[in-house]
Length: 216
Image 1 (cartoon, one colour):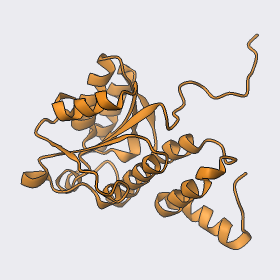
Image 2: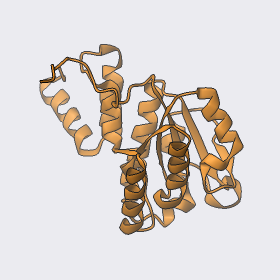
Image 3: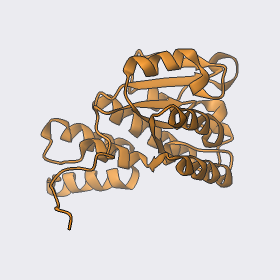
Image 4: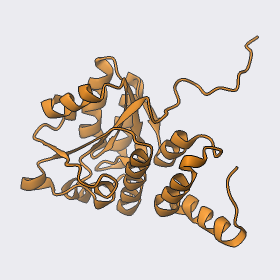
C-alpha cells in the first residue's frame, strides 16, 4: 500500500526546471490558422509569455522569415520581454537552427515547453527532435494552432505518442504558481489571469471588485 505524502509530482513544472520556446506567432502564420480563434490564440500566447516573464523562466523567442515574409511576432508576446530580440530562422524546424540550439544549450534545462504556429510543422519538428535527444517536452496546445482542426489534432496526437506532454495556457500559469500562499507571486499571477485569462480572469475581477475576495 503506497503512503501519501504532501509533495508535488516530479512531472509538474516549476519555474526553475524548464525553458520556454515560443515559435512563429507571426501575422502571416496566423492568417491561415483555423483551429483556434485568433483573439483567443493571441490572449493565450500573451498569458504564457507574461507567466514565463513573471516567474523568470528562461524563454527563447523565434520567428521564421520575419522581414521577408511572415511579419512580426505578436505584440502580446513582445510586451512580456521588452528588448529581447527574436531569433529569426530560415528552417521550419526550430531545432535545426544553430542559433536556437546555442541558446538551448546555454540555458541548459532538460525540460522544454513549446508553443507556436503551426502545430503540424513548426511545433512537431522541434518537439520530436528534442525528445529524440533526451529532453522532456511539453506542448501548450491552446497557445498553438494550425490550418485546420484535423492538422492540429493529428499533430498533437503524434507528439503525445512520441512522449510529449500536452498542457494549456491557464494550466501553465497556475502550475507555476501552484499554491495561493505564495504571496510573492500572487498579485502577478492573478493580474495575468485578469488580463489574458478570458472568463477565468473575468471571474477574478468580479470576485475581487464585489467582495474583496482572495484565493487562499
